[in-house]
Length: 517
Picture (tube, rainbow, N blue to C red):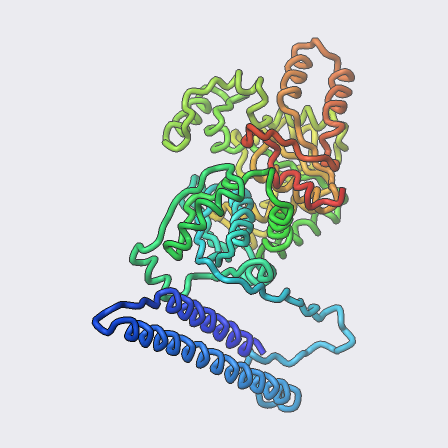
């Protein structure tokens, strides 16, 4: 049957391409005048229309005959498979596999997934997108671009992932997400292809397309008025930056719901990532509940932010050199103390230990560190490890061979951490990065699972006062708990600031339009 499935896909793609070619022919018929007068023009017009009509009739007849023959093939294969399959089709492993399990073992048989019907619409052209940033920044962008493609009635090409950012991860879309599920599960909304049809691919190779970075925080109507005319003109448009290019608020409800559908259903991790994630969760669950700590204290984060609290002189110099080495990190001269007091720095491991203790987190709980290599290593993790001895990382739970495939693939590592974060009893991010926000929103969608979102500006003031001795432990702990009483992932409406879209609460952190409130 899988052979027939592939044949169906090939035929459908061919038919769609032929139909588009006919549409282009219809739009390109011209009538030229000559010495023959109006009668000559009329003859040529009728002749052209007859040719086009005949071509369409031949196309539909071909489709009818192809469909009939295809279904005859399917019926025959099913019949042969039932009667002669075990004996004759053993050598067809990709197209016929005889069931080996007892029919009573229904739990071992995967349920048949019913795909939504394909949406039929007049295709206005093709949209190519190149995402930029880390995994979760790209994840939000992919959801946005599916919504844009749906709104513009265009065909979306599977997004290209960033390979040139700081992490230089060579992973493609299909290395992280189940690309077939992505295409098929959304086919009732938008047509998605793995690559352009050959004739358009040749045009792109020749540079016959338009590429641009859309304006950040744009309303959906921007794409209708500015991008759609370009698609109609060039047939193929490439959006070369997709981060934060769609507004959080003021969008039609159906657009918001589609963004949620893509994020929570369409973007499914590959089976390899999911199986490894399930294994980590199973290992953790054997020992009871667990907390995922997204500790943003990696070298690149500190260099980028300019936050050096607790670092020695050599480390400060190293982080400064790294910041200057990357020209696209625009801010160079940074006062770490001022930035920290404004709540713009990630919490240090020492500060995090103090806050978790103040929140009365069980000292014996397992804490899974969802992060890269912590800057300063064991020295900086000592306070946290002393306060919460059950610290674990994926490298401690999995065999080196199991993780070997993910080495040097930061996005795939981040996907594994994302999966485990969703399953945790408590999720605690120490900085408002993209993963922190997208995981928070996903956990809201899964039933408002507990997510402790630090108010860093208030916390830094409290920590400094406690460290100076002007506040007792009980006063400090009670105040920390009061500050975070309504920052645990509970249902609430998203904060909107109409004239400052960059300062609004991020849609994917709190997609309340898609939640049962």
